[in-house]
Image (cartoon, rainbow, N blue to C red; front, top):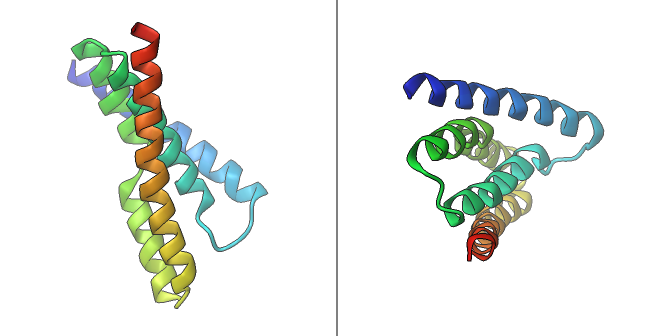
Length: 119
């Protein structure tokens, strides 16, 4: 099982790397849109995965593995503190608040969609 979890995490990290570069190539600005998109979309999918009540192994591969590699709390914090270090306080507050509020909202939305699907 541990190897499957590692493969899921590797795949999630590869998708994160690809999407981060794609978004940064096409979207410029000080708002860290790539990390924001990855974390919010990951929250939506994880909420859905929890909502449909996957069995242990598929949950470990997708929820813990893939989505653990796909989302990135450490990059979120690094970017948040980089904005603060650049004295871009307004953007830092906006990024922090939006990340938490929309992330939690999307996790709830995904959960509700999953519950409705199996309901």
